[in-house]
Image 1 (tube, rainbow, N blue to C red):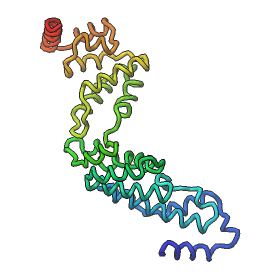
Image 2 (cartoon, one colour; image 1 turned 30 degrees about the vertical axis):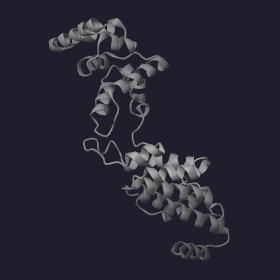
Image 3 (cartoon, rainbow, N blue to C red; image 1 turned 90 degrees about the vertical axis):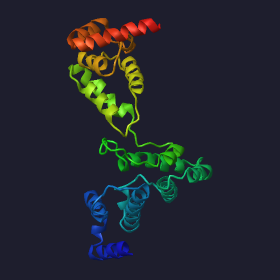
Image 4 (tube, rainbow, N blue to C red; image 1 turned 30 degrees about the horizontal axis):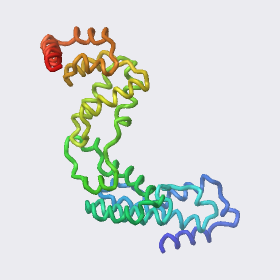
Length: 266
């Protein structure tokens, strides 16, 4: 009601020509009526409620001002059914209720609006339970419900490592090594060095990458890589030799011991 009253007053003060105002004014008006501060939401339910309110304001505007609906401050919750499903799923997630998630999947799972709501929640859970803001403290997650829905707050390895290996390996720096260490040391990321190795191997083949000396040294000294591990990533023998020659005597001994053990097990 407050929104309708405000918009009615605005309409009465405009001339008929002003009703067909420029696009920039339309967008400015939309933004000004949206709640001023996008606070960090602590629950899925709070997040969906907030953005549903934004949608309500947008829909009110589009009904009063011609063309106003073209400018969406929030277009993620595209219609009332998507909003309803998202709200129900959000509530089930916050309760960590696998049973409710299964009920909703059974009821709406074949509906395209369900997929839209699911994708929306998959995006928003990465903001609510941000793994970067809390890397040293284990986040309490509704893991079972999230898993049942098929969403995760963990960014993909492509997101975490893709640009690093694609652009910074060529510079000869240690960006990739630092990034790998950060991933493995983050308490809220479940990736292992085996997961990272598979990603690096696939990316190396696809992107035709050559891992630089700093990355190879890091894998040898910090991740206990053997010659076979490095060769599996496509690292050339000359780069492996350079890396081994540049590490400390203690790390050299460890490296050769690992090679000896791997040969004995073979």
